[in-house]
Structures are given as C-alpha cells and as structure tokens.
Length: 198
Image 1: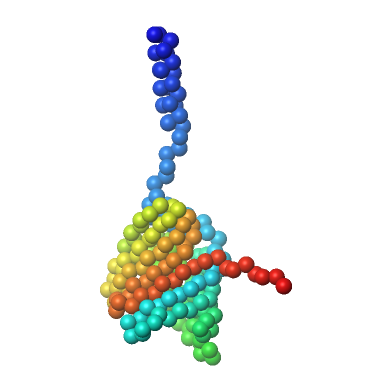
Image 2: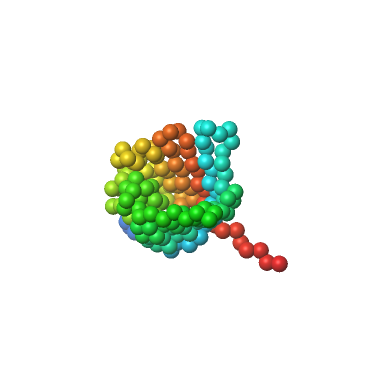
C-alpha cells in the first residue's frame, strides 16, 4: 500500500513539474499583433481590388502590385484595367495617371493622412499613430486575425465607417473598406506569382 501511495505521489509531483515547465501561451492582443507586424521586412505583394459602387450594376476590378518599405514608403501600382501609380513616401503623396501627375503634402489633408496610415501604421506596428484616428478592435488568433479600425473623428467617418484588416501571423492578406455612402472596397493581397522561365 505504501509503495502504491509513493508511486501515485511521485506521478502527481512529476505532473505538476511538467505543468510548471510548460510555457504559458502569450496573450494575443492588439500589442502582440502590432509587434508581430512590425517585424515584417516589407516587400512586394500582388493585389486584386474590387470596388462595389451603388451606381454600378457590376463591381470594378483592378489588379496590380503593392510595395512596402518600412516604415514610411507605400506604393500601389495598378496594372489593369488602366495603369496608375500611387506612392506615399513620408509626408508626400504622388499620383500618376496617364500623363497627369498630382503631388500633395499629407499634412494639408488630415483625413487623407489618417486613411493612408490605416495601412502604413498598421504595417509598421505603430499603435500610437493608429489610435490618433481610430479605435482598434481585434478578434481571432495569431493564425487568423481581424483588426478593425473605427474612425474617432467626424472628418474621417464622413468618408469611411470601418476598415477591416485580416491576415495570419505578420502578414496582411485582406483589407476591406466600408464607406460612409454604403459603397465598399475589398483589397486582396497575395505573394507575387513565381516568374516563369522560358
């Protein structure tokens, strides 16, 4: 009987030691997600953008590539249906469409910089910048998360009601915009197609 008790006690102690040695799972919260996103080195992604407009029977679909160079440079190059380039570098935004070029300073348009930073500050893991303009809501797990940005300022909510970014780990794979007028835009990101060899 004594040896059986000792055996049970030994098993119990071993189990407790094993539980103590097992690493506690880190909490998955906004800080953890943004810290993970901040480790991404940037690079290039293909995109498909689908815009659902109330005035049109069919959505508008555009394709191209996005490039991100942490922490301040973001490029969106539309290849079809019409070539267009949008480059944000620091405080400067430049839009090239055909033979026309528009350049402006973001600090002259607070609502525009908030819109740009919904992507740029998220990719950089910059919570302070995000929270100047948005309330942040996170759901999901590290393997599949959704970060929702809800505008704090009326100048922003006059254009967009909600921005949902979805992804896995430190990679953003989808961005959805719900506009104040009911229109919405869905942006899907994927790794660039492998180059084909002849």
